[in-house]
Amino acid sequence: MPTDEVKRIARKVRQALATLYPDAHCALHHANALQLLVATILSAQCTDARVNMVTPTLFARFPTAADFAEADLAEIERLVQSTGFFRNKANNIRECCRLLVEKHAGEVPTALDELVQLPGVGRKTANVVLGDCFDIPGITVDTHVGRLSRRWALTVNEDPVKAEFDLMEIIPKKEWTLFSHRTIFHGRQVCHSRKPNCDECTMNKFCPKVGV
Image (cartoon, rainbow, N blue to C red; front, side):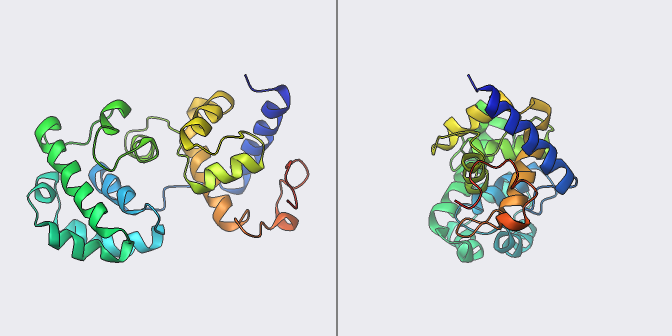
């Protein structure tokens, strides 16, 4: 169970993030759930900006899950090469879409336990898709959310799944998706990994790790 102090800090963090980033949103460009699913698979160890450079051509070439499922693997690899680890990503995308066609009539499922059974899809990717495409709240523990949550002492866990469950206990469910986006924005703009800008951060009065 989280302590009263952890709950207090969580409330202050939520309030600060809401003030700083009222319009926070998913940075991956997409027009539907399939596109966001594919974009999130590509975003592993790659910047959203790079993924957004790749996906317009990719989605124009393969607009449906069936198109991806029937695609030549080498062509997908060529189109996603600049995102890194392109062979694994291309294979995961094609196999993921093959299962979407076989088991879900080509549609992206709306249940987390079904999403995580797809190749290349873990809880992080599933929560991104559920939160942004189906309005089903989920906490997305990427590198920013994990790092900042530990800095704020909201969790001590390095494991993303354990950190996710810690955060689920102290963040109201209706805020899970927005909390994730706002934390990611803060990690990119202020609380950087190597040199957090604590002097300019509005949370420096209560952050347990200021200057650390």
